[in-house]
Image (tube, rainbow, N blue to C red; front, side, top):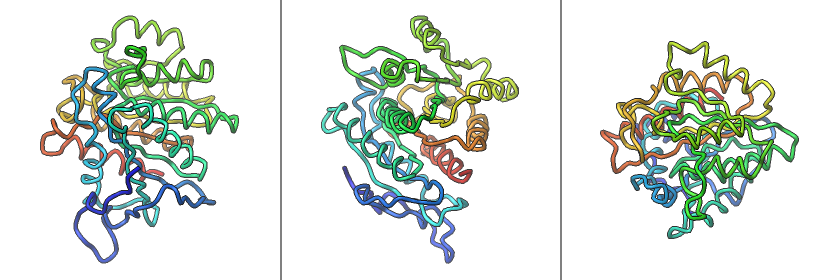
Length: 313
């Protein structure tokens, strides 16, 4: 575990701390204080390429967390919190993804237990397994029913590869681990990127899927109806945002780019709706690959989505 670095945040200076970099408090995750009155966001990164590499993607996502921080720093600050705590990064220890996941799981579970709202920066989408596991374990112990919402071109319901977890398997692992308690919704799924075997498995576990042809702004009422149906009986929601779900016009710097993805405006409408539900417990944003970014626009998109979510808390 690495402590966060002050070098990750830069921006204009102001008298009244009007920018994000002036509102960041670098914190030690091993010295958590419980917040009694309402949740506060907690930033945490997972620096790993291993899951992406195992899934035959373009490596480089291990640099994603600090690229998001660098894009966050200069943004104007409008959240209601006096400061935002950043707890640094976890690593996968020279390719030992499983060990890295175990550490990440423990830290996220501890954040939840101390009444924080985890905001996890990736890294590959494999981190959704320890993240989702922490949310599930914490919430199920309190008899809460959890809904997992994934904004993504891919279902990420692939089986393990030679017995190893990877960036395409996190929701398969969660489905197999939690059975009837696993409730999953994927928004923006692209049929061309998901073979029939995955769609068959999604049907088997009764997943809610809105494919890319229907995940369009002009179909907002239909999307909202799906969300209302999925979320109606859930007490808690966990949102995972895979940047490769966006059109590569907005997000070229990802592990698996696509020209036919969704728009940032639609994603923000989803965030708005979810935050208004008052059921959101955690989120992550994954697959930023700075090696392939253009003018840092993908990192800036990730930062704007984080800023928007926390502003809506």
